[in-house]
Length: 154
Length: 154
DNA sequence: CTCGTTGCAAAGGATTTGCACAAGT
DNA sequence: ACTTGTGCAAATCCTTTGCAACGAG
Image (cartoon, rainbow over all chains, first blue to last red; front, side):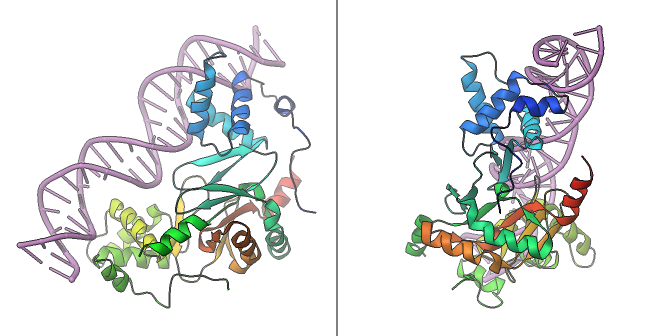
């Protein structure tokens, strides 16, 4: 049975923090909320989003805090990141895992069913004892639109 | 039919350049040679390598030239890059395609048979008209050693 | 009250870019 | 000669760090 997710159900941020003697802060809750709300967010995008929301409730966390908490949340298994293109990694909530499919031509990001890799995952496990982490995978290639465009030119 | 590689046989760098009205320079030949020689090379590693070889024949290309040519070579379809971890993208020659399998724990990089993704590639093509680029794919997860280590602790 | 946390500002590392000069055709 | 490519240095972009003030337990 695939789907080896570290999360149980709706993993309470608070519990995970307490278990490690860490603290539940407003910033952490906000960063996590932003990651969940935004689909494929870069640290910068998350910081911006928080800055926008800030108007209504207190101040937005500093960029460095966003980075620090993103890293922490990832260690806690609540968020995952993937490198899609050159510049920035994108984060997404660990719940509802999905594959990222990116077009090298236009940068479009789509999601795909993680089951797509079940076969590959099994073979890697059998051959190398390697446990594939579906949430981290990014598949690149060319989308239909870009393929057609390429065919038209040249 | 899988394996849709843009390369024919031993794609002459010179020909591809001429076809675009570009020039064959020593730097370009060296950068390409370095990528082919090093297996999973970061731009920095390539620059360093070239600096070492420089002793015997002329000067090494500047870092910016390495970046520019890496990008060019990729457009020409002679090299491919993949993002393995946080910091650095790695380049490899477009010939002999292979999947990169990276352990999130120890950073170990292994190669795997591209055929592993044939199934997924077909489904993506059928469902989204998306052409998967196997040479760019990096699969992350946890290697056997790290899994065991994790199991031991905690 | 006692640490973990955060904000700020500065430090760093990796790429990219502008330009004048050198090199390929 | 004409145009592209390169070296150099400065500019950017993305992230990380040091440290004093702040806040959660």
